[in-house]
Amino acid sequence: MLSGLFVRVNRVKIYIESLGCAKNQVDSEVLLTIALRKGYSRTDDPAEADVIVVNTCGFIESAKTESIDTFFSLHEANPDARIVMAGCLAQRYGSEMELEEADAIFGNHDLSRFSDVLDSLGDKEVLIPEYPDPDREADERDVLLGYKGSAYLKISEGCNHRCAYCAIPVIRGPLRSRPMERIIKDAETLISRGVYEISVIAQDLGAYGTDYGPSRFVELMDRLSSLPGDFVLRMLYIHPDTFPEDLIALVQERKNILPYFDIPFQHADSRILRSMGRTGDREIYTALVNRIRTALPDAVIRTTLMLGYPGEDRAAFDELLRFVKDARFDWMGSFLYSREEDTPAYDMRGEEEHEKAHKIAARWQKELEKAQERITEERLGRFVGNEYTALIEDRIEGEDLAIGRIYSEAPDVDGLTVIMGRGMEPGDRVRVGITKVRGIDLEGVRIG
Image (spheres, rainbow, N blue to C red):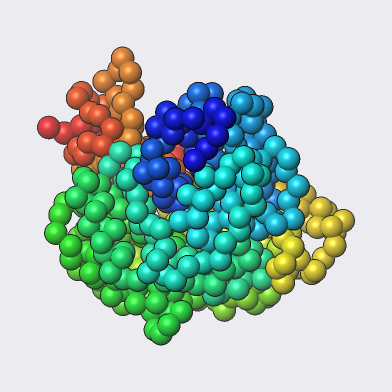
């Protein structure tokens, strides 16, 4: 039991701030569920919370900075609340972190131990547990933190690719595929709760099952898409070097698997890719994009690209720029290489050289994004004049307008669809006729 101001557990209010990736949101939902089952009540206002949990991201430098800034901002705004640093940053640095303000530091490998953290908040505990057996992992979610009608479904944890720049194996460990039956049960629960859009997530979806044999991702998608109910599946993050070719045929066959492919190519220059620990090149990756689009003309392809990796010169960047112009991605995100300790790329150059390269890469990033902006706007034009189902995220007060997404728009990372019409509430599904492209967004009119 808690002491002091926590005399009556059923009145303790908890606030969770989730930073970073979709996996962190799922983890936050599990943490919140554990707290609620212990008698806590949830609040969306950190100012009124008795306990604040900051579920941090520690992937790259900018994410670490955001996590630290958020922690101190929330602590300063409500200094009377007990505050917990959790998540990736805690997992990566918790045992060596000197953070007097934290009432507890909690890693993310065994979420079930969060109950122990809540029971000992006054003890300044640093708890960085190891992963439990896969069939004992805490994964139940009584509450969802995303948009109404949409939820994430995590199928694995960690990664075995060991890309030279990536700290994910350091933080999340090697690949750990969730037991398939637990995933199916999780999906059935989401469907029974009225979730329409289930975004299937992993560091690499295609690697599912390869920690104990061949990939079972297509088998998993076959089973998920065969479940009864009115829902769609969105796939987020498939490594290009291990893309399961038979997935394309399954997406052709199953109408509830959205033809949306998030493939983080990272680069296109073969020399840079080999240094990263990847096997492709511009021709190989362009061919993959073309195969998808030939089989699925309505396919939407998103990618993520990295600028400033050690050894990247203008020639390598020009190869990447040609790739973007040839592949004509619907969506593209880019970020600057972050020099992360405990990764193979860390010692490829010193800090002074890194800072110089970072400035050059920032200029190249602007050039790349400018080229992509034109491509995205052109690609969006094909939706004009057609009708789609949109999932409503928000209603504009005082206006006959709502904000939603059609199949081509993933939550939080892509553009949105502005829909004119009445009677639309978050979580509703409506038919919309697309009338216009405005920047990276679509405009449309509700039909019916």
